[in-house]
Image 1 (cartoon, rainbow, N blue to C red):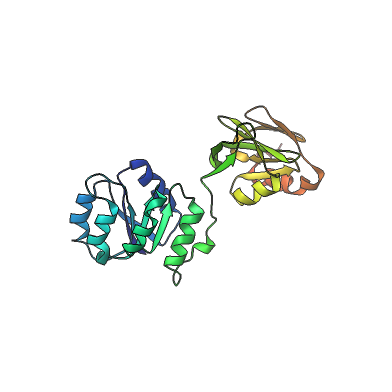
Image 2 (cartoon, rainbow, N blue to C red):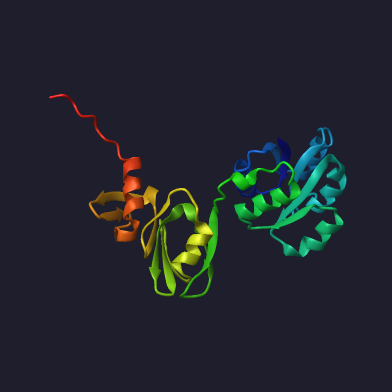
Length: 244
C-alpha cells in the first residue's frame, strides 16, 4: 500500500480527490489537511510518505512554500491546482507531477501509474470518468456533464443529444465518439443504433420497448436482441413454480 496525504484548503477538492483515490486499491489515504501550517507541523512528525497531493494557492502558506519544507518527507510530490501559471514553479519545487484542475479520474490514474510503475495494478481497473465537458451547439459554451446523471444519449446525424436528469444538451459529435469516451462504464447500455442508455434510469420495459424516466421510449434493434435478452435474464427475478 502507498501512503498518501492531501493538502488543499477547499473541501470539495478534497472530496473529489478522495473519490479518485478510492478507485486505486494500492493508495491508502491516511489524512487530509485544509490548513497548510497544520500540515507542515504534522507531516514533519510522520514517517516518510509515498505521495503528497498538494494544492498551491492556499491562505497563510502557499503550496510552493510548503513543498520546500516537506519535500524530504515524501517520495513523490504532486501539485494539484487550477492555475496553469504555476507550472514552472512546480518544476522548481522538485514536484514529480502537475495536475491542472479540473482533471479527470483517468488523468489521475495515469499519473499514478507513471509515478509508481513497478507495483501499479491499476490497468486492471475499469476507469470511469466522473464528468466530461461538451461544447453546446447553441452558444458554444463548454458544459460540464456528470456521467452519473446521463439518462440517454441520442444520435442526431452529426450531433448527439445528451439527456440528463437536469438538462438536454446538443453537441457536435457522433454517438460512437462519445461512447468511446465514457464507455466501458458499468450501467451504460446500447440496445439500439441511435441510443445509449443508463440502466439506473429505466422506468419499465414493455415487450420490445424500453421507457426511460424522462419519457423517452426506445425500441430494441434486431442487432442488439441477444445482448438485450442477456440483460433481462440477468436482472429478472423469476418466481419459483409451486406444485399444484
